[in-house]
Length: 485
Image (cartoon, rainbow, N blue to C red; front, side, top):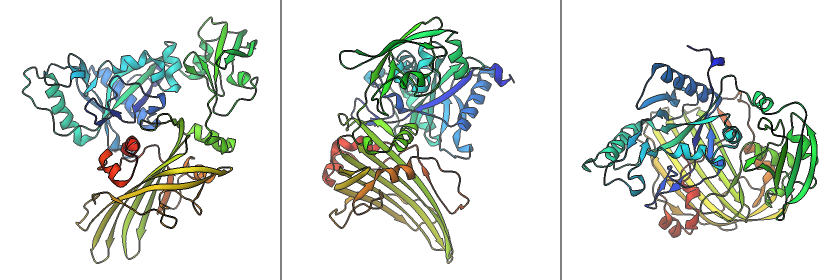
């Protein structure tokens, strides 16, 4: 096996979020729709290492066709997915969806998707967009993430798409899958080495423009190489913590070396001021923590026009023993928009075995929405407009409880969804919430209870616009409730 220092350096990402298909249904397939760069999620270092090892082994063996790279459930994180490298299939079925007619697909996704994102840096994760744009890295496609129980469903979909007779029927269920992308760098690549490679000894002219008229906010000023982001930011006045510096369409970091193409002797940057009135009430340390953990996002479909949003999710686990034994898991997700809306969803799941052998399992899904007003520094007064839940219970041994129909809950001055988001007399303290939900916590010694920031949301079951309308919710918020696994 080749030494790792002689292999390409690889980073792995999957595309999150959901999109609207031509039929109106929600799907993980973006088709030709654009999406924000932060829709990409990078796999953990552990998962990425296993994927890179499996991909290298596949390359060394000359394997072609559909190939399982790695089963993520074998790791300590026990994610219920497999990552596949798929084969290209020509869509020849006359009954295939119109947008796929005459196209090539991989795993049901258009095969030209990966070429499209490589050619548009705005569709790439910020951490790799610059390097791909400078041809220091390349996008490798043809990968997808799928639940193991849906592999057969995808196989039926593939058989349907490539059947020229039109007799093979599509599956009745849609396979749960997501696009995966690998970005490959040269052997021995590091960001520091790449930055040095792209610069030279000496200095470079730097100018910063801003405003509608493109007024000069800085320079040109001669700065030494290697160029550091701090040397630019510290020369700018009245900049906010969320403001961005762009080199073309690529965002510069707040700190560290700024990579430049070889021979480049001048840089013209654009300052983009990002106004997020909601987050302006936070202290700078908390605001920076939110940026670092990706909680500051563009508003999702259904909330477009509301500016940026604050999106935080938390997962907790409890083990119970005494008269019997059992466990409970819960996940909370709150979204606060720049125009004063709050959306919260909650999932709880638990089971318990009594000493006498009696078994009980339950699940609880809740959604709530409303508005907020800023009452003081990081203090938000919440006004709830709708609240609903779907509950399921079972006593079947080791069976998983399934949710029943959604039912509206009364919300007034006394009855409020306190379990979903921590408040004190109807007031949400943002600094406290962010400290609890937006920071990584070390592993606890107490294995009976844990709480940590979650990087994914939870999909609310059995919802559509009609159900939301009947429950008194805004149907335009459906994408938020349906986002997640």
